Length: 245
Image 1: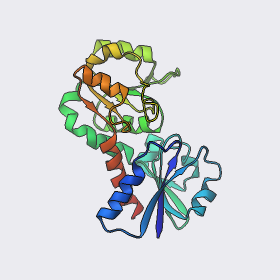
Image 2: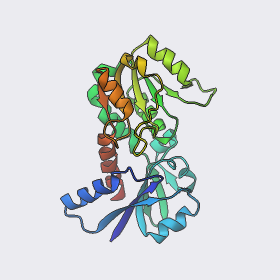
Image 3: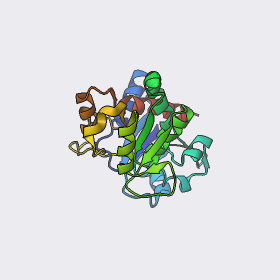
Image 4: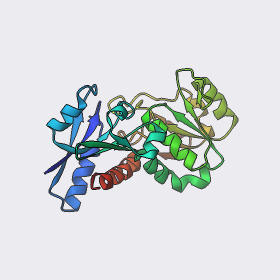
């Protein structure tokens, strides 16, 4: 039996285990299993992975950036993004990849005509946000990363600055934070709901619940919405191909 897992914290919202179990069942695969491994820190990660006999794992918040120093090799895309969500283990070597950017770009492709002249506002600056930014660069879509913390980088702006930009032009709003995720479903990452009608599309990477408070507000304003469920499935499919290398 070969063992795979999702590592992160918290994981009570995650559908990853169910998705992989369905993938295994549908394809008659009986020699792999997939588990959820909640860790609050990465201390001793090598020993923990060895104890669970993992041959690979997905990694989610808050560890997509923290895992990098533990790797023996990292793909060019993951290196550029600065975040890893998939680790393959072979001959005791850890190989890091990022499949989030491919999945995000693939789910955004049907909306290309609608968003091509939009400025993307990415809420968050963590691993998921960095993958989104990388995909948007590939698509030649201008973006800003919205943060509560000041930065000298021109791509990082405050929420007040983001509000002004949204009022001035059409925007693609992407939530790449965990705010609004189960069980905290009454929270929103965007404090200016009254001007959300300027958006060409509101995309929330959260998939549990299927419609966050942010997406419900956008839908009420007749703005097209997209959640992160398809992105989850696609990045898992890419990860599965990597695990089999």
